[in-house]
Image 1 (cartoon, protein in one colour):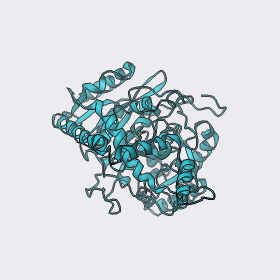
Image 2 (tube, rainbow, N blue to C red):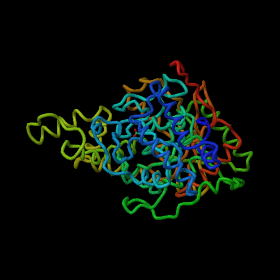
Image 3 (cartoon, rainbow, N blue to C red):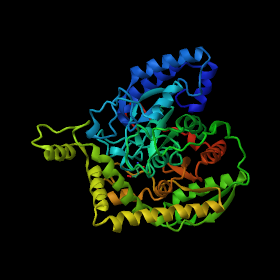
Length: 488
Ligand code: GLN
């Protein structure tokens, strides 16, 4: 049952073929056996999961079940969970027990989903490999010496390793789509404002967006129906009705116009990835989609703009970790200055410190116009680029990543090389558009992702397109072989 999709598990629960308690126990057993090889979790909550599973079975017996009632999920350790440590992958929050639930968690609780625990991530979601976590790196279940991507690498690895049926992630510059691609699963970053950010620890507030990760697009649709909502507690939440995504998956894709940006297939892309993506696009074409080449001329400026804006926002967001209110606090501070300095020196890792420095510099009075304002101007131009392209086509398709998952440690000493890995995902956050990655093949035994980018609030179109593709392909159903003996 654990190798089934969330959708199939939901059907099996509805038919009484399995109980949530059985399913949850099976996941806990598998996690116990294989988690030491993968390190997908920061915290596991098996007792809570079993209690939720029992409650879910009782709810179902009363005839009051939702599609996700009793489904075992895992949550990125960036979503506050009441009574459970919420670390954000940082020593700074190693001792932080959240006193409340994020809206996303509340919504899953309300439908009776089960939570198996909190998944690993790059510290404060800054990274593309999950290697900057205070809790050690997560390993890619397809090849254990490879990174799973990041920052939601724990979530992606958990799905690929069959440690959970679905997982939550967040995406500031690619953190749902890139690990989904690296681990051979599906993941969608919704339109900015679609999913509440309340209780989701802030990194770059104007870019951060939560979304679901799972095996199939049908699974994503079921999860997004629950995650997406208007939330008065998040001032950037958008008050638009949430479509019944799972009901719309069978719509025809005939006549849908798909644009391939020529800049996404140029220099920097591994040609073997290009081949897989082109083959996937061909499949969509045979299903009736109309393919045309388009241009997103400012693609090369997305990473430079992002690495001013995201650190600027991070530097202000992370100023709250001062040793006074919550989180790590240094021993015996001499005075207030010493408290701030040593708390932050001890609590933050190298990458987080680097970003705070860049952000503070870019926002300082002397450099604001040269860097921050310029980056914001670029952001607007990049958004306009997409707007123009989306006049010509309905959906933009391309690779999710330029390269295959790299070996652990290979890029740790070279932050810029790591930043460049987000070439195709970052602009989507700058524009606030929805983007999705679905498995579209393998190169050397490692998964490859097809990225689909849509217009604002057109998540349905992406999910439908992805679902139709998954009816014609089985990449998303492939499973890595993890053995209990410790090998790959
Ligand atoms: N890799 C990008 C960064 O390091 C994006 C991370 C994310 O989406 N959270 O900022």
